[in-house]
Image 1 (cartoon, rainbow, N blue to C red):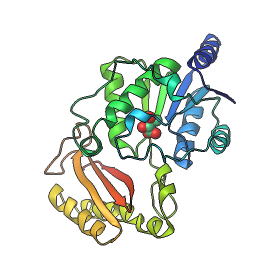
Image 2: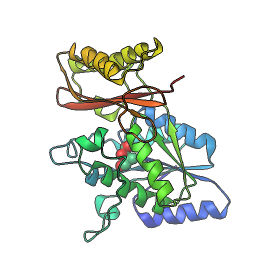
Image 3: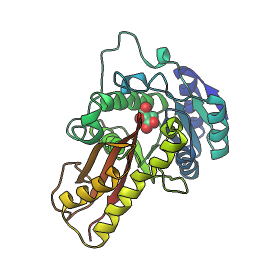
Image 4: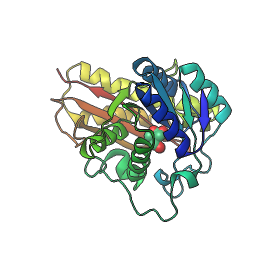
Length: 282
Ligand code: PAF
């Protein structure tokens, strides 16, 4: 496995692979990789001959006051994880390699980005769509892999790839959890041991929600209330949002009569965590 820092090196390597007839996968990441990323890389390696992992903490998807400067980084550890998971190339550019200082172009997806994290993090999805478009154009993969933990991001990128005719299959992979249910996230690293315990409330509250749906409840309002009550039982948790939306359009719904996405964002201390599940109505 090789690690490169320039666009030219990626292009040359991918071109050589394509000449050999190899299929190419891209797994875009911001580094500080965990088992969730490993599952994306392993899946990519099982479905493609060559896997490129990009590691780039993308400054333009962070808002003012967010954690850009403190975002955890550890390239040595990431390199081992990538190698073990079956990656063939790491692309880890500097900011100056990715962004021209006089760049004037931003990629925006409308509508799908209005609610959920889009409402709470203005400009975030423009930053994500812009960097992912650039990575798609740099790597020119056949398939690209994203985690379902960022459910809105996955929906937005699928739509962007469709609308802009990227000839790339976008593949979503299931959330990977710790044994006690906490969804794996690079941001879990910020949690003190007390906060780590408190963070279990995200998964617990969603489990309560699932139980209610399994019992046949159809009211989105009631579903949100049950999740809210559970989250409020944890003193260290501060709710950012609880949303019940149509799984495809991401618009809010009142009655659960089609596939829905139940998504939450919760501050545990200063750390903002997200979690979700998809419910296919019977
Ligand atoms: O999900 C992430 O880690 C990032 O949003 C992504 C897709 C790598 C773009 O910077």
